[in-house]
Structures are given as structure tokens and as C-alpha cells.
Length: 534
Image 1 (tube, rainbow, N blue to C red):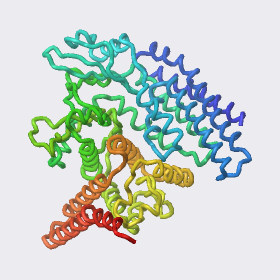
Image 2 (cartoon, helix red, strand yellow):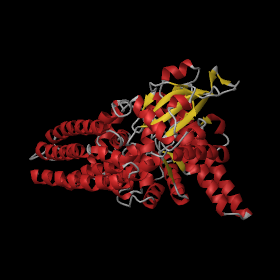
Image 3 (cartoon, helix red, strand yellow):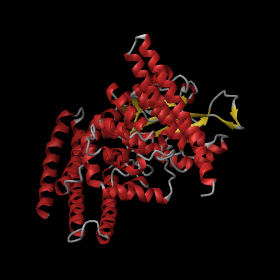
Image 4 (spheres, rainbow, N blue to C red):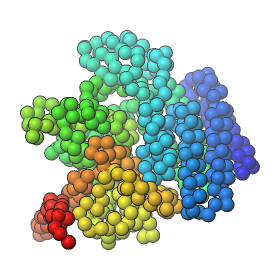
């Protein structure tokens, strides 16, 4: 074990020297890069010690215990907690990409052990680094050529929010517009490559010791997505494309989706100036009610918006946690539902998007249609097409729905509903723990774009839980309807002949009848059945 630790330290230092030399050689400011690289040895040493400590803790704590026994389960739980705290401390001390890694883990419920998810969730989305005013002014001077107090008529030096990669300041333009200015933490562009390499070291060391612990795909994802997230002009392009997609492909809800205007003349790759939004955070239930909006309407709108993105647009916002979505009453809307105002969803932080090719999008839509309707044959067919394999299709269905296989194929209405109660959580946690090796193998097999869909699902589940206490029947009705619409649209695009289109129309009518019976009539039937004696 300690030989491995020494090897990890040696590898870390080699990575540090090589990565540091590359950073200095390619940087526009070699003196600044050299200064940054002086901080690498302690960071790399922390990585190596953390990886070796976690590995040794698992080996020592579980040594001699019978896998599956109560003693083994208890010891594993305590080791998970200790290791999660070590990883949390490492992320905060190193910052930057490490914070982003912690946020990824916080949103992978039941894909990584619960102890890691809860530890990261309680801290990573709230306690992010804050750059000093001098660092902010330095970014402005280098990117725009002027200090923020010159660029804007007013610039609040105290940020209103801070995230892993940037922080947000309120400002007023010279023509009187109130704006939100997103400023990247300094040095991230220079240190991100080295940070990713050292994160890779930690994950590979743990995988070397525990072959079932294979989260190398997570590092690969961060390596691919980080450069795009660090380029705020790319984020501006994503936001514009997202808005166009809703207007062209989902016009029926386009007015209910809003994306803040970006001021490109006041932006750069590290500075993004946007329209300031006065709205409530999507999980602020009290604030939403005070604004005259029902939380259930917000939940339905969020579910519908992301179902449209996933199944119809194929261009998906993959970081929909609570801080990246806001709610306000639909502007200039005189209609009310029983006295409640209609909501408008404001989407923020467009740095992380994934594009699904047409084949993947159709297979994923068909899979969700099968899951909602408990079609066992189709679940297996489309799980295999998406890369799960015939042996892991049941595990894939469980990860997607947070339900064990017997619940997934239960034909009764509401078989996928998550109430968010302790019984539901305990059942899923036991399932995840029992099939952890299979889940790890599944994650290794699946395309990374599908792994990001899993993360998106987990984010949306957390939002639904905060708004309505779980994943209600309405959310699955939305998924079923939008996925069916996407499948039928694809069929119509492929078949131009009149007779073929007529057959597709009949299929749509029959599916609409089936969905009506399943979601509107069946719940009343089951309620009536419960009331009848015997």
C-alpha cells in the first residue's frame, strides 16, 4: 500500500514538472505562469496524500469483513463518509476545476455512493471561492483594456454570487441598463490543464486499487467540457442557440422560457455581461408562492422545457441545478389559473451543453417512452442500442428511473413515481449499493453524452423534490408525451408517402388514447379500487 503511495507521489511530481513546463512554455505571460507553477508541488502532494489516504482507509477498514454483512456495510458507510470529507477538503483547498469536480459528484445521486453526494451537495453549490476586487480589475484590464469602474457607470465591488469558475457583480451601463457581470476567477485558464491532470491522477490511483471504482469517464468529461465552460463567448453562443431552438422547435412554450440578453460589446472570453434578472430561485418555494405562482406549475414547466430540449432539440443544458434556474410571473400575461399566475422559466449559465445526434436522441426518446409505459421488451431493445448491453439493461433502467427493476416493469399507473420519502430513498440506496460494481461497469460502457443525461436527470429530480416533494405523475406524463411526439416527428420526416403518413397519424391517435387512459383515467380507477371493500 505504501509502495503505491510513494509511486503516486513520484508520478504526481513528474506530472507537475511536465505540466508546469508546458504551461510556462505556452503561456502568454511566462513570468505569471512561473508564479502559478510554484504552487503546484503542494497541490500535487495534497492530491497524492489524499488518494493514498482514501485507498488505505478502504483497504484497512474493510479488511477481513464478510462482504454484505452488517459489519461490512457499517464499516463501508463510515469509510465513505471519511473519504468524502477528505475529497471535499481537497476540492476546497485546490479550488478551480476541483470545485467543478465536486459539483459534478454532488449531482450524480445514486451513481456515486450517497455519502459522497450528500457531503458535496451540502457544500459545493454554496461555498465557492471569491476573487478579490483587485483580481477582478486585473481580468478587466487584460481582457477589455479598461477597469470595471470605467467600463460601467456603476460597478458593485461585492459579488452577489460566486461559483466554481466565476463570480457575478451587479453593474449599470452608461446608458442606464442594470446588468449582471460574470467575471472568471483569475488564473483558471492557465491552471485548468494541470488541475485536470492531477485529478486524473487521483481517480486512476483509486481505480488501480479498486477496479470497480471506475470514474475515469468523469475526468474525461471534465477534460472535454472545461475549455468550453472557461470560454464565456462559447456560453453566449449556447444561450442564443437554446433560445432559437425553443422559438423554432417548441413555439408552444417559447414564451414561457427566457434567456437573459448578452451584451457582447461588454464581454470577452472571461467576462460575460448580461441583462440583470429580478426573479426567484427555482427552488425558493416561499418566494415563488409570494409571487403568486404555484410550485407545481413551476415543476411542470421545468420538466416540459428539459423534455423538449432532450427529445426534440438534441441540444441540452446539462447543469440545471437550482442556482442556474429562476422563476418569475409570465410578463404581460393577463391569464390566471384559479387566481395563480403562470410562470416563466429563466435559464442561466449556458456553459455546459451536450448535443445528441439524431440516432441517440431517438433511441433515448424511445427508451423513456418504454420506461413510462412499462414496455419490458422495448426497454431492453433501446437500452442495448444506447450501449448498456443485454446484461445491464435492467441496471440502466434502474439508474434512469431511481427504481428497482420490479418497479420499472410494473404495469400499474404511477410505477415510476418518487415521493421523496424515506422508504423510497432507502429502497433505491439499497439497490445502488447492491449493484455498485454493475453500475460502475455500466458507466464505463455508456457514451459520455448519456452520462451527462444521467446528471441532468439527477439535477431535475432534486428540483422536483424541492418544489413538490418528489417526481409526480405529471412529470412522467410530460416525458411520455414529448418523447412520443419526437418519435412520431422523426417517422414523418423519414416517410413522405401519403399512406405511410396516414399510418403514422393512426399510430399517434392510438397513442394519444393510450396516454389519456393511462394518465387521466387509470389513477381514478385505482383510487376507486382502493375504496371498495375487499
